[in-house]
Length: 186
Image 1 (cartoon, helix red, strand yellow):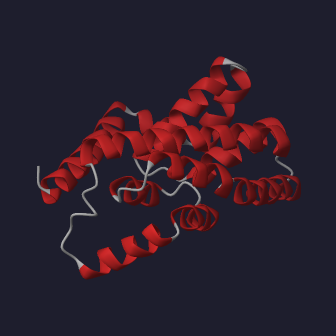
Image 2 (cartoon, helix red, strand yellow):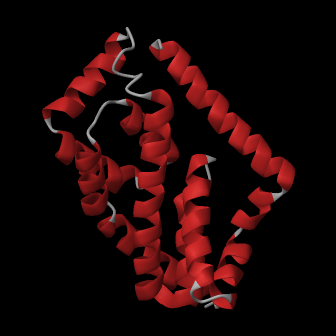
Image 3 (tube, helix red, strand yellow):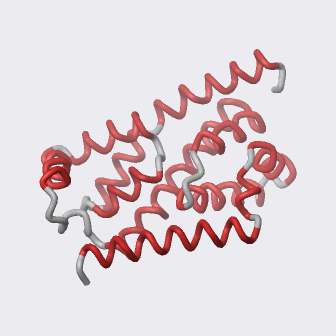
């Protein structure tokens, strides 16, 4: 299958998922209050559902900070950060596997000089690039899609994700904890 067809398949899949979630009202479950309530009402099942929603939310462009804020408000900065780190890693893994399955390495096959230059930079230092990208953009869905379609190996993707996420998650945990204390909503 040509790269343009695979990219179209990925786009159709993501749009279909978005429309399905919107139509069924599932996107409403991605609010800060709904996620916080989910975690607090069901300590074990709630955390598993939280991880599942994070993974699904990442596929339909829900920003990761919503999940992090909900976890920090519900569990505190330490446990909220740990839960978010696990959920973010699972989410990035699910996105990689799904998008790679549908799109293969379609970006690698594009006849575009800018895309090829960016991919060549990724090829020279894949682990360092992914760690840096995770520190800057965390679980940004577009980053996950691009990395999955770039032909970067899963092992490098996962290791870069595991090493790149702790620092920004820790900083966000401190920020949301401080913000909650300042606004008196903790």
